[in-house]
Image 1 (cartoon, rainbow, N blue to C red):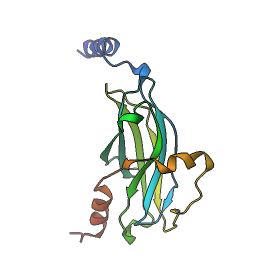
Image 2: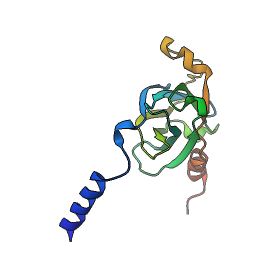
Image 3: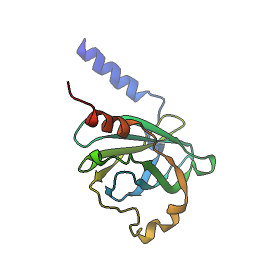
Length: 168
């Protein structure tokens, strides 16, 4: 039975309808690692798709080292489906309970057919340092004015609620 399943999977993958050769590609990314609770975290991203059918940006956030996460999906504007450079933002809760906490953000780009880019990973550290006024590297100046959208997730709020709720 196991051999049949593996053989079946091999045939399915071999004759599948998704051509992985034209998947979107994340060319580069940049984000400050340190954020003060309550600050807006900006993630700069540059991506392209040779056949111009990128559909959305998928972001997953979780505490560093844990597997629990939530998804946020940001649609890509019609004129940017072949190539874009811009920023995503995360509004962080202004809770002192976040200080010292680290989160992992994984981003990938999907196209209309379902192909996904290789994911990138970024680390967010709530350490009380304010990098909101950081000096943006020169190569990212052009992208800092193109707002791609927000990464909206109640996960950070739920995480704070969990930390502050009375333990039974």
